[in-house]
Structures are given as structure tokens and as C-alpha cells.
Image (cartoon, one colour):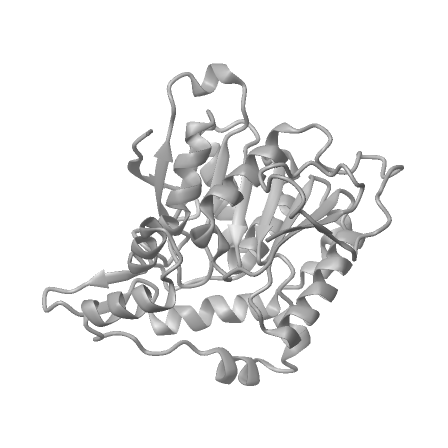
Length: 329
């Protein structure tokens, strides 16, 4: 297995981003697209470990990123709006001298990579949004105060590490160990054995405010790069219905959009089911027929109809039945 190398990179935006790089031998000569993977709000690059080493085993160069304020990256007072974070990734891609990599982001990170594809289409080959990229907090909350009150994070600083580890072992018992360890990396472990989130409470609210201000629907028609939306059915019927409507609207508005559902699945499906997510990302980056053609002449009509994959190997994600939306079970 390819071992990751941890690196710090200074950007012209004034921040220093921590990345983990998986570079298999011969990656540059193999001709496979590189991948840049980033996390959600209050998360960190390590949740992508399971996907990253599997993509590297397939021959892809992979870079996972701690965004500003998160993990081992620098923690400026601001700004933390989605556009600024997207610009950070564009600068990082340039610093790393990556030639139009594929990018993926989870949750808030999905909105960030969507904005990256919108603002810097020449910098990336495709965009993947993992249970994100369709988050419209401004549509759910009429004002910021209500949003902040509803979604402010719990204050976990001072919780014993072993308490958090026990909670993860119970709540994420079906996850591979690398997913649980990646979640623990959301926290600094203090000398007294307690934890503190790398993203402070105040900066968490700054990121959340930027997400509340961001409207993916406003940019969908102008995202010219192929875009994959990976959605997780978490079992909350009301939320899933709302999510299905948002995903269908996104696929209809994106020039080259496609969706794939995991049912049932955790919001952190990339940490829970890294083998299937890695296979799907590999297909998206290498199969020339994975996305609708650029001219849209063959856009598939049934964007709202899930395709049941249970009749075939879940690693075969080719759109043979001509539906924009697929399901893994």
C-alpha cells in the first residue's frame, strides 16, 4: 500500500494548508487523473484516508487537504466564506503543479469544490460533491440568527478522549477502523487526555455563516466541468425527501451533472464505505461515457428515478440503463 506523506504548503492567500499526498510509483507516467479530496465543516483530511489509499492503489496520485481553520492547517481569523475557501484550493492546485485534477469535497466541502469548479473551471477536470454541493441553508433559514441557533456545534472541548472513542465505537461500529481514527483526528488531544476541536467554536460559526450565504443553485448553470453528486440516504425520511428534490434540481440545472445515491448510508459515506466511493470516483475520472456529453444532446431524461444496483456488482457504476441517478445498497 502507498504510504502518505504529510506536507505544509504556503499559499498567496496568506494561509498554510496541510495536505497528505499518496503518490504511487509511475503515477505521472500512467496518465490517470490526480485527485484532490477535501472534508466537511469541522472535519479533516484524515476522513478521506480509506478512499485515498484505494485510489492510489489504482494508480492515481491523491492529495487530501485540511482546509483553512481545520486540522493541521493554519487558522486565520477569517475570512471563511465559500468563495475564499474555493480560491485556496485553486492556489493549492497551482502550488502542487497538478494538471487539472479531479476534485471531491464532502458536505460543506461539496459546496466549496462546486464553487471551485464555477470560479476556476480551467483548474479542474471534474467535480464530485459527497452529500453536499446542494446545501442551501439560506432557503431553510430566513435569517442568520435562526441558522446559528439551530446549527451551532456542541462544545466538545474538555471531553475525555476515551469518552469520544467509546461514542465512535458505538455509533460507527460498521465503519472501518480508518474511518473512526479519521474522525478522532478532528480533535487536538491535550496533555490531560481531553480533546478540543481543531476548528474553534467561533470559527465554526464563521464557516457556517459562509455556508448560509452560499447558493449552489445560483451557480449550477455556469459549472462547465462534469459534476457528480453523491448523496447519502441516512434513513431520515423527511430529510431524504428534501435531499432528493435538491439533488434532482441540481442534476437538471448542471450542464453535465449526474447523481449517485448510497442507501442506507451515513452522511460521512466516504469514511463509512470507502471501497465503494473509491470505485465510483475512479469510474468518474476514467470512463469517457460516465457523464452526459458536453452538448447535452443526450441528457438522460429520468433524473429523479433511482437505478437499483442490486442486480449487479456494486463496483460497476456505468450508466447502462441511461438514468442520471443511481443507487448503491
